[in-house]
Length: 488
Image (cartoon, rainbow, N blue to C red; front, side):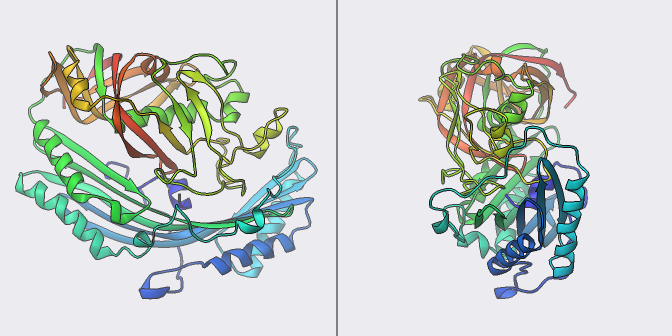
């Protein structure tokens, strides 16, 4: 949940090779690790900026941390990077006028200038008609200024470049033995968030994150696997290597199949991709209030089949937990869809103020992200089936490892389009017959989840745009629309 990730997205093997954000010289922490900002410095910056402000209300958010990345391609590590950075966001309020300014310079002069810029910006803004107030403190806040918790793993904080290289080496060694080429990334990070405002909110916490991705490529097909955790020690490179290599081996010499309606068995990464877009398109209060959401006018109504239940819980250690949002409001568990019925959307302080009787659910994003509140720690209810049972019950369909380059077409209809990638297989009479060439799908998310026939017992934690995570099971869906085919 580091801000570099929030701004740019998680590093990936198949993403564009754009430069990452830079940072200037920074002091060294213990063991030679770079450390741009400490807990004490974060709290000092929060307090100073609030003192400098003359606004009716002021809020300061400090996002900092250290990110370490090992990239590899063609079975060789080609990049090791370490980045330390911190960003300060100052939001000021005069009446209903709101301004925002940011800096990554932490000296007093720069902090004063940032506060002044935020205030000058606020003064010339039109009134934000629905703005009520920044959030105030909650009961128990005096005991909530903590530096670690379930979101933090010391193993990740101390993970070294040699350990990342060793993990990558297991993947490349197996890939090389099979005559394939592997590419991917192993990223670890320690991130800190501090939030304070003039109404009395004052919070600080740290989190860690580790992610490993592998794409293994052969002459005519590829395979994919990944792992994601708060704890780098829980990352399993052996499993990632074995799954990606087997997928690649099984994907060689694919055949083309005609577009159309198919039964599908979607592995967790594919399900998580759909759930990610469901949350992004329709489960935040801003989209709901502006009529851009499938939930608009449908609270309490069924929108999927009864086998689909989805909730958000930023405190569950099975995900990527964090105790509060970027306004300092405690994260709350929110039931989003229960047995197919839309129950709630998530709120920040601004969207809560637009509806009578609503309060923030602890889902505010960083101040410079204008999407409105979003669910960032979603969990799909598991079922009682196995992947093998789903395949065995399929007369003619497709087994899909994951989707790639998914894009929304119609938010209210939850219509999305994208490609299958890194392992798509034909199922006939309950058996996997062989690989097929990648296909384009154009499918409504809600109609797909209305056609669920089975859900797996087990779930996997999958990345969500680098912002959060989705815990998703595999699913069998009775009808899924494929609209095009490829030559690979």
